[in-house]
Picture 1 (tube, rainbow, N blue to C red):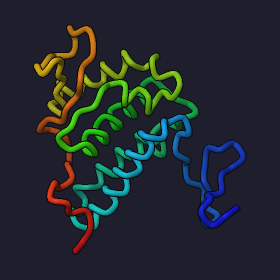
Picture 2 (picture 1 turned 90 degrees about the horizontal axis):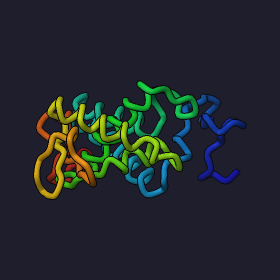
Picture 3 (picture 1 turned 180 degrees about the horizontal axis):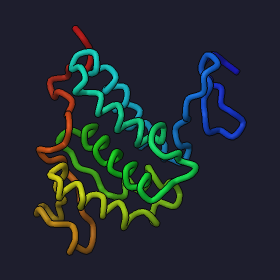
Picture 4 (picture 1 turned 45 degrees about the horizontal axis):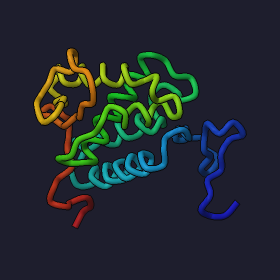
Length: 174
C-alpha cells in the first residue's frame, strides 16, 4: 500500500485510519458527483474555521450525501434513502451556488446503477423541500409545484436553505 492509499476493511465498508474504523464513501457514487460532493465537504470543513458552527450543516449534509453518515449505504432504508437524497440535493445546490440541479443528480448519487428506481422518490423529496421553502422547482423557466408536472425539472436553492458558502471566495482564514 502506498502512502496515498487508504486501508479498507475486507468488506470495503470502512476505512481504517490509525487503527480506527470510519465509514467509507459509497463506492457506487459516479466519479463526477463524488468529486463535487468531496469538494463541498472540504469547503464546509474550511468554512467551519471562519464561519463557525453555522457551516457544520454543510459538512453534515455532505457526509450524509457521500454515505459516510446516516443509514449505512449497504443497508438502505426508505427513510434513510429520503434523508440521503435531501442531503444530496442541499449539498449540490450549495456547491453550485446560483446554479441548479436535476433530481437525477441526487438519484445517481444515492442509487448508483439503480438510480432510475429512485427518480420518483428524488422528485418527491424535492417537492417536500420545496414545501419547506428550501428549494424551488422550475420547469422551462417557470416555478412549479412539482406534484403535477411531467417531464424534466430543475431544482434551485430557496431562502430557507441552511447555510450557503460565501460568494466572495472566502473558504479559509486569512
